[in-house]
Length: 105
Image: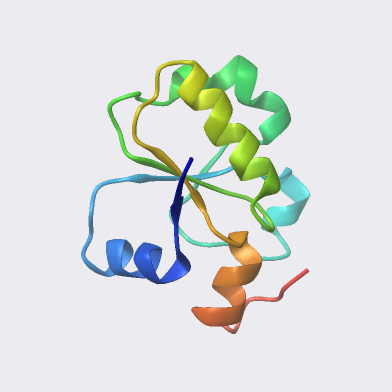
């Protein structure tokens, strides 16, 4: 499974690259710590909502630490999505290294 580091994600965002940042956390978690511009589909809803995503898009999955995002990426790959990666360390790693104004939880 491919991984994207928080530094790579920061560069993608700064360069306005075309990709989908898919946040698979539960809705209440968005209020704790969030990255602007995410597509939000909670992991438990992904099996019924994955068709909302374009399999031709680059997709970076994100959760709190990376575990659910890894499961989500594996699921998407099983459905034919070929350009999927996981944000290594999740939003907590983003909060630690990139946007320290965000809380880690």
